[in-house]
Length: 326
Length: 265
Image 1 (cartoon, each protein chain N blue to C red):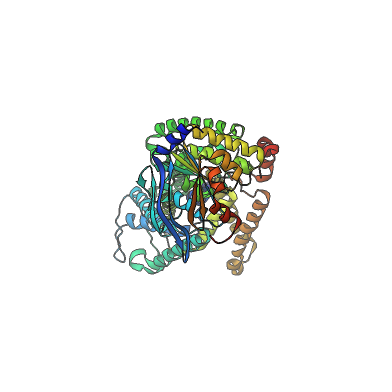
Image 2: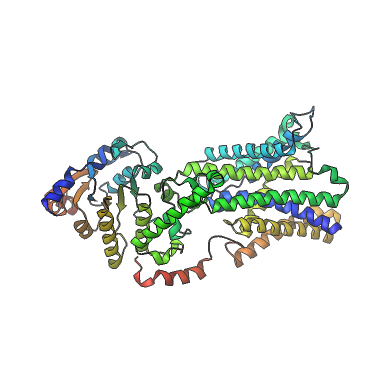
């Protein structure tokens, strides 16, 4: 029973990560936008939903006591707008410069969360965030399972919608921008317009994930949204295979399993006074796994860019080497 | 070419016009007061020694850079200030000197991308009117397959474009730009880096497409290709238009000979 409860809890967290990774896959895997500030958009979603749904609190703005669903929609809207603005501000930037800017955005969001006490509760965070099925909290197993059900449904909807989009003409334009922006422009596609869209939709999904997590744990604090979160999600996408939505989901579950597993392992293996240091081993474990995956499968488990060597052999035969030009 | 068809071609309306176009890069005047018309249905060649300003002219026409002054018109509409991505909707398509296929998309996807006015390129339409998107996609796929046949690449339809050779990439770009139904296609050195056999295929295809009423402007170093293909040739040197006429005429022009062989222009 305990194990089942823990399993449900574990999967809920892993699926919330999946949602963030799906958002990143749209931005990076499909469109090639190097967003290393995703923790900021997750935070925006979490705080937006918390502000909208918590009961009135004299110490800070709000809460507005609105229904949870309104909080989630609000998170998506605010997260989407914030991401669109980031996209517009960085229209002229590519790869490394875009990365630096998005990283800056995330740091700013985190510092605002830490210091704007009137808005975010500062370092103490926001508590008493209403939990879906809160009435079931007495029976943890049932509570965990219902949470898992909600998160599964949301992730499934996001997955199906993104799958549909990535096969659509809209997704084809995003892929074209990833591959060669100048060619796409010459064919009539506005790089700016689509980049902002990819930023906004991805950001909205990340914000929704942040909101889900906030309502699942009932408490949020600025420390939840440090750059380590961005790092974890990037590893999840790389392991799963960037460009693949299925890879984003599976990669997230796998990496979270290793992360949580190595955490449990260090807490068993090391004496309490060494725990804080041993926690660094988690990052090492993830790093080693990342190296192994990249050595065995350079495009990740489900990467959509076919493996080069095997492919080119067959394709070259088809292309007819004899008739090739330069 | 008979005198009659030549006269007919000359009286046709221009598809593309450059009017007193100037482009400066700091102190350098790369294109200096160039004016010309590309008339409907012709294949016009633009030649000149290295550094003559051909590529700059090409980029100006394609919209990737803006003119310092002067005007560019497509089918009589001024487009000089417009963003590059709007040009194909005006009927002006282009290819690249070094072809730019989308390497990880299949050939058919490469071509379908160029379809204009696709409802499915709007985010929400994919959820609101999926049947309309699907119908358009079917039509686009059928047309893309026809174009692949035209450029003799049907057998590679579902391979990623990165497997293509240099010459095949040029053919793919030609098919891709055709998908947008342009009135005029700008070709940037279609013969560069292409072997002799495939070059013949490219020349044939350009003729076929031209016979369908599509106008061409091509920049080319391969004089043999220009002579065989172009109805009319413009010669640029030092940023200015030097000479204009049939390939034979410009080849006899002493100013052109001087520009190519060196000397003060």
